[in-house]
Length: 395
Image 1 (cartoon, rainbow, N blue to C red):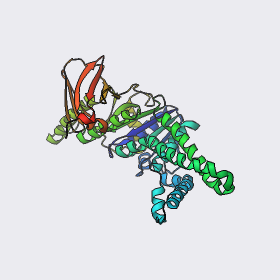
Image 2: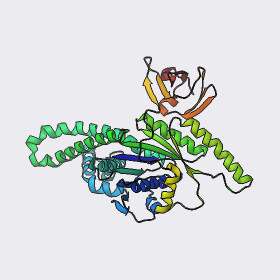
Image 3: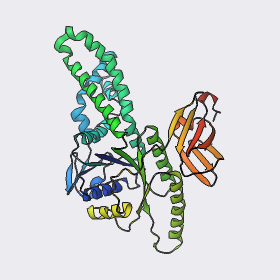
Image 4: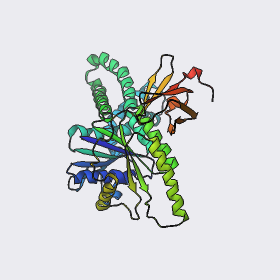
């Protein structure tokens, strides 16, 4: 079973690349589902078929769906939300019921529903492969942090209320049967969320691929995505560079300048995302819509290679706590040599120079607010120390 999740800045072609990957996977004989978790679905447009909230067969070995979060919350979590609403309103005299209802929605419930869809397919093994067309980067990072956040809220609710139910149930009988059932459902949901977290962080099952274009803003957002995925131990296995201008483009100053600009950013991508494999997809003169066009994109991007493979194994970065309360960022750089490491930090950006090698990276917030204390290259790993917050210079 493989789960491959494509993410990236809005408009870079995530949906198209995800659909193309699914088409190629189906052509290779794997029973494949491609699903969209983006609220603004465009998967149906890409495949040029009508889709709904349940899987629809598109071609041999290929199914597609656009996950309906709103419908699932209404169908499955209404009871839980109603119960939590009751707790809030009963515990706060005079509170407006409408406000209580608003407050009752457990943070991230819609994201949890989307992710549980993915885990359901993985557990039941209805499909050999599940390809996810995710929402734009920021929403997807929030989506992927929800298992941890939800379990925190669920744990607090459960600890508070289960004690009350346990004490009063022998005396109240049927009166507390409803709350007890809801707590049991909450426990089951908590267990399912724990299983979900394990599935999504297992590199043999799940892979995360960032789709980008050779443009500065897009590259920066992709770097942030890779940084935060690494922070939560979600395994990124490759980068897809989409819409690369062909060399045989019409002559003229405009096209030459665009090619030169892309060449600059393609080099930046190679430097900044090493050692991740890079896949390149061309910019077509035609729209990439329908199975035939998507199959062509898959051929041009992945060549003869099965896109369902795991392309990279290993951590892209690791953050460790130091004895003095500081933090250390460790980045594998097996092909870089040199002893003099120069660092320059600006906000959440870190500029690294080692000999002739240069790299720009985006730091996660936990490091961005600290002062860098120096770095060294040791056994193919770059180690950068960050001072404790109390010692960091004011910004």
